[in-house]
Structure formats: structure tokens, C-alpha cells
Length: 343
Image (cartoon, rainbow, N blue to C red; front, side):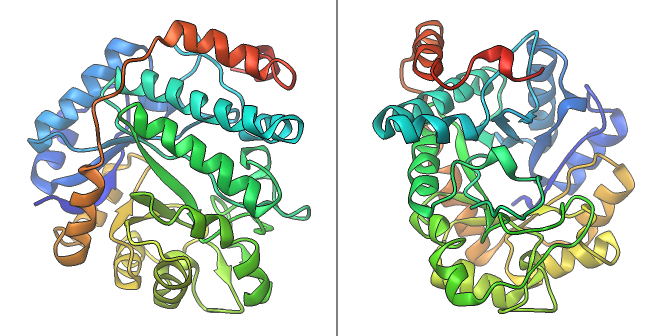
């Protein structure tokens, strides 16, 4: 049984030291970043090498949203729009925007599945606030719960149809954060009633998705002492309770600046709070070893959630990607063209 963490690696290939670590530590999955990406053959060999090390078809993840957050890009992969472009299209034609969101994710899944990547950390279901930090910004599908839920749901369906599992993030909401959790700990002081009606609502609508990522955000009206990732109250009462999410909950990157304490302390705190899996992204081997030493093998409810999530991986339906891209660009033409996003 794999251990309850997802690891990164440092470069384009898995080093001998990393290979032995992965074999012995048995992480549940691997997450890729731009530092791990050069060309399709190289990425395919990387995912293959990881699975040979762990000895099974373990999940390989990436953040491939489009816009600012796109780990695979030109010249080998197309530029895709940020979620805000779908938001603009939705205001013109809601049905067209939902179809475009689904088609966009189907295109993303086509790109990823060809490389052996079978999990995309998408959709972003955060509801942005005008005075919030820009870390979410144009990654959001809109500024109303219904719109965000509808577009995020369409995006998730496109991924699933393409054989790629979606990860809804950042539960229970990062949209009000006035700091970038990569750097600092955001504190949201909004009352719970408002949060339930706004920020938490899109996640409630998406609660049946198989995978979710936690937010490194303090919601002081509910737990003033801990960010959601390490808050048993937030996980139990909000994520599992009022939102009703019963899938696999992974932490956001445990090495981010929002969290305090050692990597070991952060890892133990996330698991103790109710996260099923710890995500560690920076590829630093000493930190990876520290995570592995402080989480157990998956068991009990976490094991069942992991198995249920992976059981949703499916063979992609037949798809003509060239025609699909042509249709997608036509659908998006009123609000977006590829040259609007830098590589």
C-alpha cells in the first residue's frame, strides 16, 4: 500500500537517488512542474520511470489550468486561456461558455493523457473578492457561486471524459485571501454565514468530485489558530460537514510559506487534521525524505477514498483533437485569442 504523500522531483529525469527514494518510500503519486518539462518524449519517459520505481500505475499530477498556471506550453503544447475568459463568454452566452469549458478540459486531458499524466489540479472553484490578493485573480471562473460552480463542473466533466481525474481547489476557498499563501499565511475574517453562502457554495456543488486540494488559509470565524490544511475543525465541520466532500483530500503544497514549523511538523499536522494525503512539490530530496518519514501508509477511510478516486480513471472517449481545437478557438474568439496569453 502506498504512503500518504505526493512527491515532486528535481529535474527532467529521475536521478538514481530519487529513484531509490521513490522505490523505498512508496509515494501515492508524483506532481510535475515546469522544471520537469521539456518535450513530449522526455515527459513520457519521466512518468514511465516514476511508475517503474513505485511498481504500479500510480497517479501523476500537474497544474494545467491555462493562463498563468500552465506547466506545459509552447512550443510543444498549445496556449490555453485563463478561466476569466470563460467567465466573459458566460456573460455573453452561458450555454456556449459551459460547452467551451468542457471542451477546453477535454483538450487539456488529451495533451496530458498522451504523456502518462492522469490527474489535473483543476478546476479552481475559488470565489474571488475585489480586495483579495491576485494569486487567484483570472484563475477564477467568475464572481458568483452559481457561475463558478457551473463552469468548474463543466471543466471537471471534460477532464473525466478524457481519462484525467480533476482536483477541485482550494477547498474551502482561497478567493478572499489578502496574501499569497505561497509566501504568507492569509487570514480571512468574514463571518461564517457569509462564507457558507458565498465562498463555500461552489465547493458544495462540486462535492461529488473524487479529489480536492485544501487551502492554506485561516478562517478566523471558525478556527482562528490554524489554516484549513491543518485545522481539524475546518476539515471536519466545513469540508466534510457543511460542504459534504467525501473524496480524497490532499493538502496544498506543504512547503509553502503560509505554513509554520518543520516539514515533519507540517506533514503530521495535515494528516492529523484530516487530510488524506500530503502534497510536497519543490523536489528537494531532504524535504521529501522528511515527509515520507512522518506520514503512514494509506489505510482505513483514506485508503478507501484513494481507491474510489482512482477507480474513476477511465479510458478516454474517442476525440479528434485537431478539430476540437479549431472549434474551441472559434467558440472563444469573441473573448480570447491565443496571442493574448504569453508563453
